[in-house]
Image (cartoon, rainbow, N blue to C red):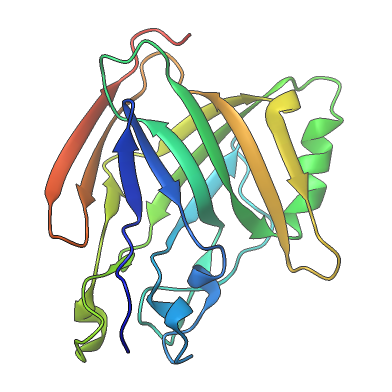
Length: 207
């Protein structure tokens, strides 16, 4: 199978950016479609205000035919990756199991809840494909994005949007928020040209 290799991430303006095909993470490595060679990033450990999703769903590591229980598949993200940045605004988009809709509704309409703190951890390993011609399975895949600590974002409930399209098994979520004061992380990054870099983030004062 041939085609153009796609990087999972890019960096511009002090932000780490992702724009991923939403179907790649739920496409088996045995599908034979070019889609199964697209990069995918998903998290197996997610919570919001300390509560885990009520249900997970099946996703695929790159090239894999066995499923992994995923909590959140990332489709878009804008993440500060420069400790000198004065703004630590975060934007994320992706999908969870449709059962999570009820949990989001409870948060949205709670009289005592005005903010949601999301935590994302347990990122998958086989994220990007390094060769269309290799035939050695999982070894053609690599980890493009690896945080040392959970990604934590504080979101005002008015900034949390979600929907479940008709007959969809997923709830699609989009939110923007901030890293709270004291947030620290390091992102190990690799692209299809085998460039390896690390970005350190330290949020001294959220704005």
